[in-house]
Structure formats: structure tokens, C-alpha cells
Length: 329
View 1 (cartoon, rainbow, N blue to C red):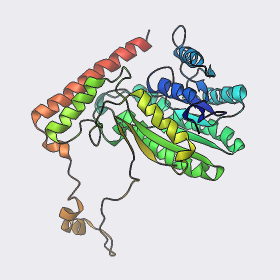
View 2 (view 1 turned 90 degrees about the vertical axis):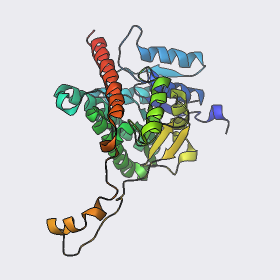
View 3 (view 1 turned 120 degrees about the vertical axis):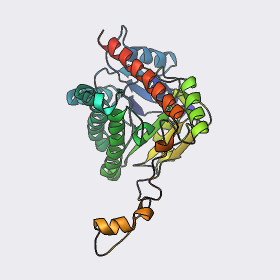
View 4 (view 1 turned 45 degrees about the vertical axis):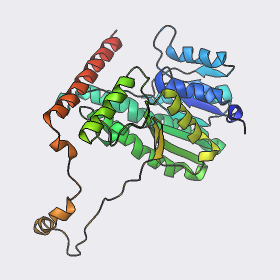
């Protein structure tokens, strides 16, 4: 099948598609022949989603905007209903809407915690639930959720980490719920350094930190050989929706920076068995074996490494303050 005709007759709904990775995903689906529903908040004049719709139509594609917040059940259901009413079906749902709030745990407000969880995790759940009704009725569909490598460990980012880790668990559960209906659900950990929130300098900084200290500053390993782009992430997401990826469901996919791969499923690193049951004394006797590979590599970092980490987080905190100021008008 020709690349340009890969998704002829298909309908894709992308949330948070007014900019960044979501915009790139919407454009990628359109270039591959899908009709696209572009979701984002109704902000700006004109709203960002409307501008993306114009881009798609300029490419000769077919698209409509469906504004609304994914964090509200009635709006999530309305967004899906708009897609089905306009195009008669829903083949692909990409849950891209999300944002983070930087703060160490002692300074993280309940308001910010709730806001991050509401959009990243609850919003993903609400959109998946709404889409499941439409996809089950037609007997097919693909859902792609957006997780993050931040879920594996980062500093001053606990709300976002918790939400994205929740997305991974939600994805596994949804995949099992829907597999008998021929509906697949996967999650991606996207890497893009052209979103405005991140840039090539950030990619270079992360790589230099790993080379210097032997550990990654904000993810389990270096961020690939090249600075990732939104367009690259979008290509991987689109491929995951294709029939060539029909065997993949319930998995977490790394996407971008010249790298694609499947994360290992959760598994014990090792375990010890004692049929008598474990007690404090018995655990103490095997402690060296039990915790042999459980050391925290960050504990031995020199002061200059922590200064770099703190500097990165100060910059991200300032970025968050600017975002709040924009939201406040």
C-alpha cells in the first residue's frame, strides 16, 4: 500500500493537537490519508486547533476542530461524539493533551497536583472510555496514550511522574479490556526537542551530563543519538496505528531521538524464597544479596553534578511560573 494512502477511509482524533507533538501527529495522520479531528482548548484568536485544521486543509486533507477539556467527562464524550457525527466512525485516538507543574514535594500545592492528574491521567481515562464505546460498536480501533520517561524518575516533578506512571498502568488495563473487541491500546514515551518547552540545547545538556557522570539526569538512559523532533514522534505513533503493528498491544514504546523500542514489562530484578516466611532476622541475614543491585546512583554524585541538576530545575520552575502567568491572563 502506498504510504500516502495508508489510512484512507480512517478517522483519527488527536487531543492537545494545537501545537507541539499533537499538532505533528494530526498532520502526520492527514498526510497518510486519514480524516482528522483536532482537539485542544478553545484559547487564542483564532484557537490553535482551528489553525491546525487550516494547515491540514491546505495539504488537501479533511479535518475539523473539536475544542474542549479532556479532563471533564461531558466534554470528552462530546469530543468523541463530534468525530463520529462528522465522519461516521473513529479508528484512532491519540491522547496527547497534558502538561506538568514543577515543584519539590514539600512545595507542591494540592491545586497543582489535582490539575496535573486531571488532564494527564483522568483526561486520558475519560477519552479512552468515550472512544471505547464507538470503537467497540464498529469492532476495531487503536488507542495511543502519551506517557513519559519522567515516570521512571525525575526531580521536582512528582505530580507529572505519578500521572504518567498511571497512564502506563491504565494502558495495560485498557489493552486487556478491549483486546477481544479487536481494539489495541499502547503508550509511548515521546522524545521531542522542538516543542518550545524543550530544545536542542536541552538534549545536548542531558547527553553531556550522562557522559560526565555516568547517569542520566532526567530519564533512565541517554536521550538517543540525535535530538528528537515532533515529526519523528508522530511517524512512530502513526506506524503503531497501522496494520504492521497489529501484534503490539498493552506495551510501552520509546519514541524519538533516533530510537524506537519496547520497554520491558514490569518484572522482579531478583527474589529470594524462604518457605518459613520472612522475618526481620531472616531478611537481615540475606540483606547483602537482596539489595546488591538496588543502590541509588544519585547518592554518590559530586556537588557539581547536583548543581547542574538544581540549575535545570530552577530553569524549569521559571518556565512553569511563566506558564501560570499566561494562564492567568
